[in-house]
Image (cartoon, rainbow, N blue to C red; front, side, top):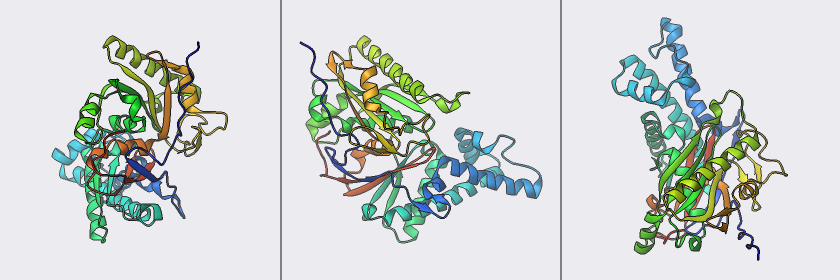
Length: 361
């Protein structure tokens, strides 16, 4: 007898176990285009470049040296802030201040949306968050919003950006599927990176007993910075790369005797249709991911048809949604909250908690 087909489930669902996804991937515009573009990593680098140009025009010197702003490492900027020359630190501080002003304007626009009203906290993740520069920008934006009369907190996502988009995948899995297993596979697809990870579920089992929100740990992580490749990969090359990453993780789990659930949780930019198609918003990905003939969950099931002898269930949701879900344990004291991810673009999602202290996915 052939194995039964894996159970189907709605992708991009608004109704998750412990939260309702009120909205995600809001595409706000002004006269200059998408306002989210004003609060991306690229936008911060552009602001920094403007400050450097002003100083060079006045003195013919650049306290930050010759490295272009879009290549300046975050670690170097953090170090300059702490122990660099005052003028160099002042340039970075000026960029932080201007960026915070832009971000506060963007947040204010979100708060005017019906689906974002009564938001009490926004967690901020993405690549910029993984630096002291990013943390200061988030803190300064929170101050600006409160000074303008908004009763809202902006805080950095607790987990590292390389892990947050994987950890949140736990909350996409049906709770019954996790019982008796040690880990799941998760994939985080971004505008410049692909990540795949083995997410440990033992902390989830303890949380289930205590009544806390599920938490996990990333035990194995594979990262591919495809934006650094000389030739941009095609969509199919990227998908096959994901498959290869997952296969290696499965082999490692078998070697370590980690019992994998037959589940892969995936976060990807864009509006996700119930059948797993990416309707729009995938323009920063390599190739055309919005084609009506392309279905990412189906392709991943073809590459990884079984896990531990069982048909694989793949669940796809927006990457900002999954990123935000990684912070579920830390937002149980509010009813309505959101997430912004500052990376290649500005990802966004708004949530309402079903109940404080839920029992897990």
